[in-house]
Length: 79
Image 1 (cartoon, one colour):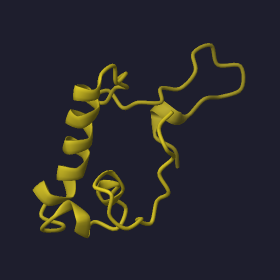
Image 2 (cartoon, rainbow, N blue to C red):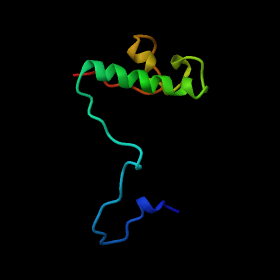
Image 3 (cartoon, helix red, strand yellow):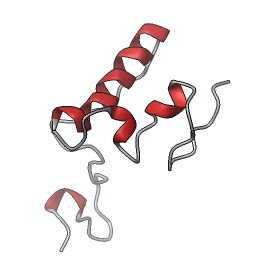
Image 4 (cartoon, helix red, strand yellow):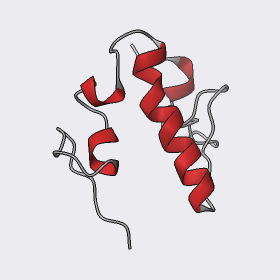
């Protein structure tokens, strides 16, 4: 069963919300912000005590950005 925010009957006027109320999109507008957001994402599994280091999280892009071996997720090069 879908949560109410995803349920949309035929002919609904307002599309369902994509982001949950406490989440939002964010435009990365500088190299500093990119670094900040990557550090935040890479730290999440460590903070939750799922791994000891970001490199240990199989789905992390940490290795890509540190120039180490490729991880499970292919990272597109920046343009």
